Image (cartoon, rainbow, N blue to C red; front, side):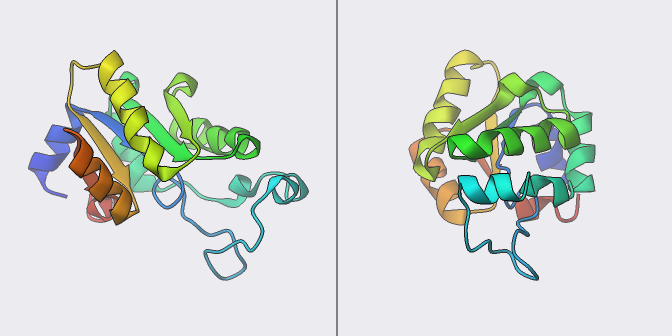
Length: 154
């Protein structure tokens, strides 16, 4: 990631996706995929996010940010919210009130617009692993769109 982009992000509100961004997407045995992802799976396995490691480069970046300027926006069903939110607060110290959940990726733009309405004082960046989501947000609003791979060389 260029120093210029790092400096721009540190002066922005940064919104992270969870699965595939803050959390490596490793829920299957030797693969990314969990064949069943429902309330029974979450309760049977207690919390699948307990076995997911945070990413040290992102922990470092977030630690260097103003905590008021770090958000999460992730797709989640009601039964997932506790596990996902707990993972984020435990591993990244992101404030609970800055964790937003939506029912569909297409709703992420609504969450960003809400943040912009409340905190219009700074640019807003979203960090996600899905190019189609980033494309949709780029086309619909005045947001910085950052693919998670930009952090690989941070």
